[in-house]
Image 1 (cartoon, rainbow, N blue to C red):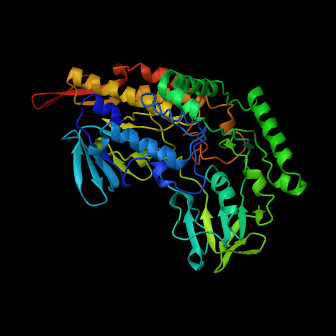
Image 2: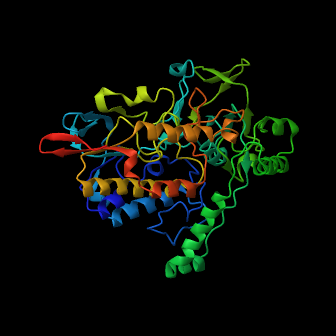
Length: 473
């Protein structure tokens, strides 16, 4: 978004609670942190990286890439770092947004774009007795690097996308590791091949070759089908089951690791080290629910106390609670958290009725079908088109019409019927009422095509004539 605004000549400020660019790739530094989207596709189309080291880049390499792009595009001068935005307030009188921060400052802006995404608020379960525990606890997104886990007895709660990466890493150094599993996950092998020096030189010499690799990854995602009873889902589930059976010979352990839902109901995961980890003599898989903390560790529902030195929460994020870290107040004093009490919605995942000149990147129903970088580029181009229309027409505000918004979201929810996301499993895709609020039910190209057509008639438009507000639509 910053690159787009800079190219189009806007005056803008980027607020970030961290000390620099990178977002989740700056914050998540746990052992083994890596992307599960191929590197060449998890990069900007306008800033290809010919020097990716391997198929799926690790966190330090991705962070360095993002920092480099920001620096080369001059975004450092626009960054207000170490500044947490706590609330946004729209003024019906001034027709501007007040942006308030944790340091008590308030600044006003004509336009606000939220880029906090959906993986910014850690999900830490409220386990009874947590204050009794004498050991160390931390969430995977706030990894404690001050002290090694070597020689410790460690508990890891959760078996999601982060745990699947750090568990094999810490198992190699911990004296003993107990993995507390609520629900088993389907895992497929990760083919993570290094790029040779010759390939990297070719990509650098001829960017079209790097783009071919990127485009090939895009086309692979375009082939994905999310129908629960579809052939693709059935075959993917069969392949994942076969992989599990090849890797886990112990029938009791295999049963514990076997899901009861189809592939895709929960986030599909890739690893060649997850299953072998549970065959290590110093690793235990625990499926009895965690009931409470004790002074020395965790007690499960079967009454067994598990004595540990450190507890790691691999429990993910409050993904379905969009903008959960912000308090947003819109037109006529409306509060976004109230409007979204039954599940977040936005037109094209980007615009919300009642909240003029506010746009959301990685907003509701934009996840899950392709590289999020591809989605974000489509959204920034769309927002750029709206801003261009505002400048060209002398508009004061743009606000998506309620009927347009509601019709779009009704279509999105109707398209969820029969998808794996509504199969019988717990996942972060759904609001507590069962509504799928994170996923887009069509392909990535479909999303990009829809956002490629900026229809200004979808919006309620206002401009100022002298000191009077004129409603154009």
